[in-house]
Amino acid sequence: MEKEELKKLAGEKAVDLIEDGMIIGLGTGSTVEYALRKLGKLCREGLKIKGIPTSVHTKRIATEEKIPLTTLDENPVIDITIDGADEVDSNLNLIKGGGGALTREKIIAYNSKKVIIVIDDSKVVKCLGIDFPLPVEVLKFGWTATKKTLEQFDCNVELRKVMGEEPFITDNSNYILDCEFERIGDPAQFEIEINSIPGVVENGLFIGLVDEVIVGGKQGISTLDKEAVV
Ligand code: 5RP
Image (cartoon, rainbow, N blue to C red):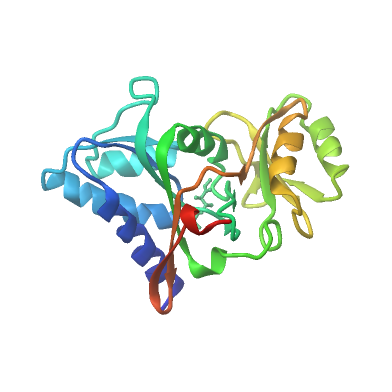
């Protein structure tokens, strides 16, 4: 099966968990888009839910699909969030932010009763940081100084650019610094250390926030859940 088919399997499966009356956190990325398309169809057929998008991009898709929307300020408790990830380890910790939406995604995940992650099986790793650089959202003000501080963590830091030219700008009008490590040994400690640097808005480590990961693989769907983590 092609990667896109694996993403579709996982994305669409997550929608089975959604029930009438729920407030749903709508993640960002190409895997979640499959969930959004299916959810849109169900809404048009009569499912009554409200979604809270994690990015301008997701808001656009949800609007196109006629998914009723609300905000976190109107509904501060979310029933289920469905989101993607760039890496998932065996403790269900994540690296996110490939699409640059990590700050809003983390706020939404933190305020959700249940967080479901949808991925294809290439995203499951033994140790975070092996395959994917850690995205860190930073203020534009003094970003070169913030970059220098991040480099002290023994990583290669690159300002994210759009098509190699202009800096990528997040929905919060900030920059993204992509930090390439050999591996991230203690992600929980690291999340705290990075967020204590002045100028850092948020980093893409999601620690202890996830309830279930739905994985699309060549053999079909498998799930990793919190209960199985020791
Ligand atoms: C966006 C994210 C995405 O969820 C992550 O990059 C996965 O995206 P995709 O499903 O397209 O691989 O964190 O900020």
